[in-house]
Length: 189
Figure 1 (cartoon, one colour):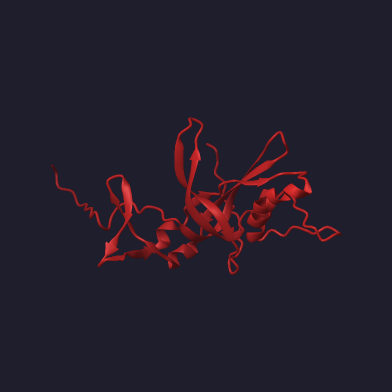
Figure 2: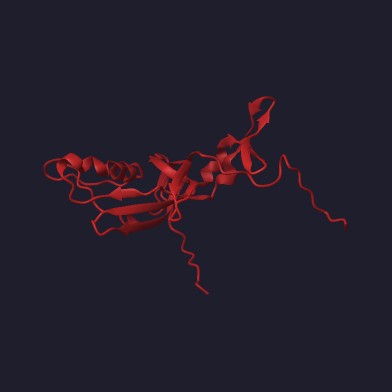
């Protein structure tokens, strides 16, 4: 072999596995799918914010194909969550169903809570009942929120169970600011 000026130390170099947890984020993507029934499912993409750099998370190390928490002196080793900055995670899907009978309106609770937690304000009608409206991309892109990133298991089209990290809950990020969309556009050639 020929000598080369490069080193690799297993304990400190290499890939750091993404950590489930609650992180500050901004909405960076929006997709809605409409079904024949009139129901809609909203899939929202979040990008973890620069504020992750001031957080600490457990360090994970690779052991074969698995990642396990690293221990130092018998205690979990903590590292900066800066490596999580800029990572993108999608929501698990938020449903909105129209024309529900009064005894089934609970089915839209997740939609109401999800979007009000990121700062969307729905109006009340003359009777004081909340009128849910269809959220559009311009209403939410750049909105700040605290996102709960957790493992989510689903069955793919081939019938196989898969697990991925998804945003399963959102919470208000009271001191977060809305991030303006980037003016840079990718040219498709």
